[in-house]
Length: 104
Image 1 (cartoon, rainbow, N blue to C red):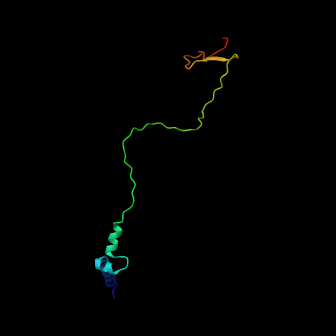
Image 2 (spheres, rainbow, N blue to C red):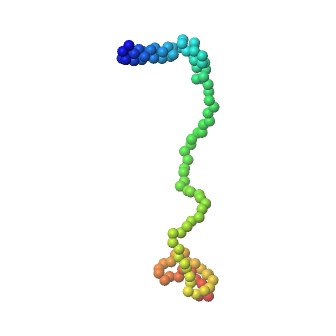
Image 3 (tube, rainbow, N blue to C red):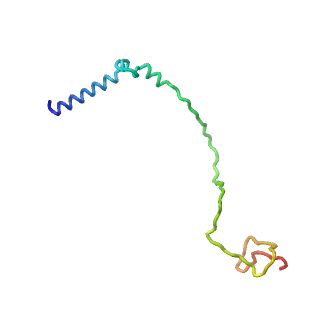
């Protein structure tokens, strides 16, 4: 046989076998391919769990535990010793007092 004829014969034979395998009558003859069994397998139900979604307001809060590290350090010292009585939250100008010591 010529190579083209041999290839054509193989392709036609494969198509015929595929059609026979797809035929319902042939499926009944093959073990495990019974049409009734295949229908019963398709109808098998699986347990499913579901959650109902509801809209809600999201907040942009992040709660975390950790350590904050500064990228700069400043050493504060007073020129006189004493106990701090009051600390000012906002320093208005250069040279303004940041704290009040006892007795001053």
